[in-house]
Length: 118
Picture 1 (tube, rainbow, N blue to C red):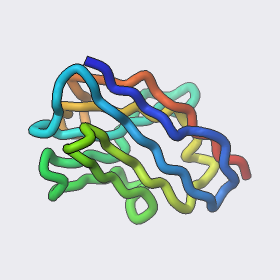
Picture 2: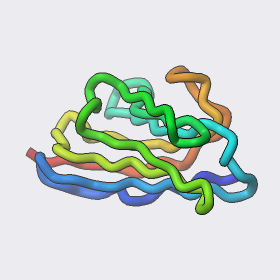
Picture 3: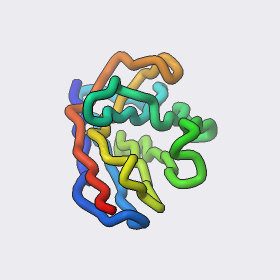
Picture 4: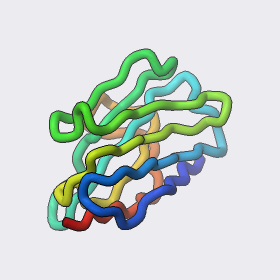
């Protein structure tokens, strides 16, 4: 089972990025998927999650109204659209599958670095 995250990079404050996470090895169409991030020197934290059908989404307070999570079950892929980025969003972003709410997950991707310059 592999979760391959992509789309990270360097962007100026106020800009946008779209992260993608493609799953392989098994289908996650009946599992929750989501994103976590780890800021430098801090523990990994929850960012957003989406239910198996895409109908239920949950966001951490710092990203609410700026980030949007979505999924395409036909492609076994989850996305994170990040708008109005702030320097404090700078982190390594990890996709995950089969979440335990905001506490953790069974499967993790390798992480993609997002750097927001001021």
